[in-house]
Image (cartoon, rainbow, N blue to C red; front, side, top):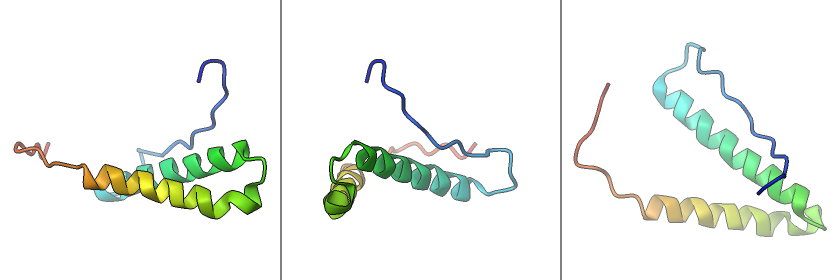
Length: 76
């Protein structure tokens, strides 16, 4: 990724949102940023949109499937 410009959506952490809402926003913007980046790199964005979406879903599914909760939960 050297010398490549990347656009990443910033999240307003100063708003009056709950921690859960902020975490959901982080995930949402990360996925949307990934979709936008992959579409921008595609030679045929309209034709490859479903394949790009399926690829992102597969990535997210792998992350969730490989998740192992830690035994120590920090509520601070």
